[in-house]
Amino acid sequence: MERILDVNDLRVNFKVRGGVVQAVRGVTFHVNKGEAVAIVGESGCGKSVTAQSLMRLIPSPPAQMSGSINFKGQEILSKTDKQMEDIRGKEMGMIFQDPMTSLNPTMTIGRQIMEGLIKHQGLSSEAAKKRAVEMLSLVGIPNPASRVKQYPHEFSGGMRQRAMIAIALACNPSLLIADEPTTALDVTIQAQILEVMKNLQKQFGTSIILITHDLGVVADMCDRVIVMYAGKVVETGTKWEIFKNPQHPYTKGLLRSVPRLDQKKDEPLVPIFGTPPDLIKPPVGCSFCARCDYAMKVCLTNDPELESVDGGSHAASCWLSHPLAKGVSV
Ligand code: SF4
Ligand code: MG
Image 1 (cartoon, helix red, strand yellow):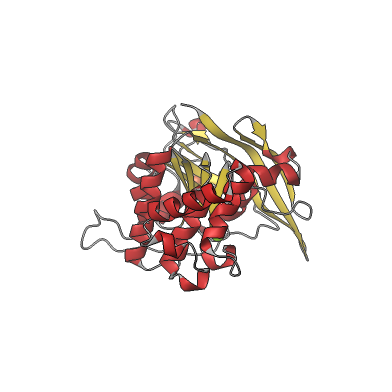
Image 2 (cartoon, rainbow, N blue to C red):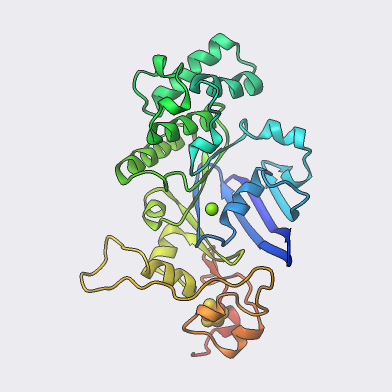
C-alpha cells in the first residue's frame, strides 16, 4: 500500500507559566493512500495538536516541534511558511468542529470555494465559479447556483459544515484532516455529513484523518484507529482489532464507557474514573498508571514502548501485552 503520510517521533511542547506542557510526546503513525484513520482519546490527549501540527497550524515558535512529518516525500517540519501555504488547501484540507470560526463571514460561500481553485489550480474566475457550484451540489446543498452567492450566516449549521467540506475538497487534496467535524451538529445532520464525507472519500480516493471521541463514528467511517492518551499513542490497529480485541486498559475503558450496538441489556456503561496526568510533569512510568485497575510495580517506574501484540500491525504500550511479559501470568 502506498503511504502518503509518515509521522515519526513527533513531539510538541508549549511553554506556559509554570513550565513546559509536553502536549505530544513521541507520536508515530502512518496513513495509506485512500484510507480513513481515526485518532481517538479524551480531550487534552494531544489529538488536535497532532492534527494541527500536520498542517503546521501551530505557530512554532512559541511551540517547539521535533521529529518528522513526511507527507508525500516532503518534510513538513522543514517547510517555510510560504511553502506551507501552497500545501494547505491544495494537498491537505482541514475541517474543524465549528465552521463559523473557519469560514469568513464577510465573503460569500462561493468566493471561499473559488479562492483555493484560483490560487492553487490557476482556474479562471469563470471556471472556479462553475466548480464551486458543482462542489456545493456534491456535498448535497440544494439550489447550489443561488447558494454560492450567499454568506455563511445565511446557512444553517449543517449546511455550513457541508460548505466547509466543499472548500476543503475543492482542490482535491490527498489528505483531509477532520477534527470533530460533526460534534456540534445534531444526530441526523451528523449522519448526513458523515455520509457526504464517505462518498467523497470513495469518489476522490482521499485519505482521511478523523479526530473524534465518538467510537460510533469510528466504526462507521474508519479503517484503522490510533488511540492516544496523555500525548502518546497507547494502542493502534485496524478498526476490528481495536473493537474486538482491545489490549490496552485505556482502550478497554473507552469501549466500556460508550454505548455499543452489541451491548447486552444488563451490561452497564462504565466511566473511566480519574483524570489524565499533568503534562507539565508527566509520570515517569506508564501515564495511565493512576487510573489503571491492572497497574503493577513496574508500571510506576518504567514506561512501556508501543510494541506489536500479534507480530503484525496491532500494537499497544502496556506491560500486560508487552513481548517481554509473554508467559508471565499477572
Ligand atoms: Fe496499566 Fe501497567 Fe498497562 Fe499502564 S502498563 S496500562 S499501568 S497495566
Ligand atoms: Mg480537540
